[in-house]
Image 1 (tube, one colour):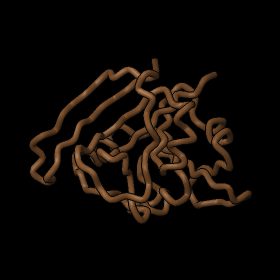
Image 2: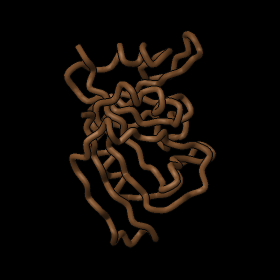
Image 3: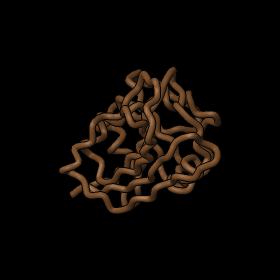
Length: 164
């Protein structure tokens, strides 16, 4: 049975998603949205992303960590040793969320059937980037512009895409 794989990410105008293993901005609305959408689901990430989290593992979620170190274990997490291994261990009949980092996003893009994107309408200095989204493969199903967030000097848009 095909797994329900979603990618959730916030992307700067220049495709940046992180620098020095940290987020490029603090958007409370986006963090709340992330928490609400991923609550009670599997979240799948690389090891560097896991160690960048402020609280590990994130509460009310099942964390799956992808590592290329055979036999490596991280307490209270499901370990996967390849993308294929991760897909095999994902839940059936429920959304599984890929949350980063850059290489993990690139490797999961061909398998994802839904994208939750926060588009930040500003360039940021970054060392990690999100791959180009082949928009002819995706249909935009939801869009919400946020232009009046008093906590930030930029606008952003919440978008949801489904694979065509």
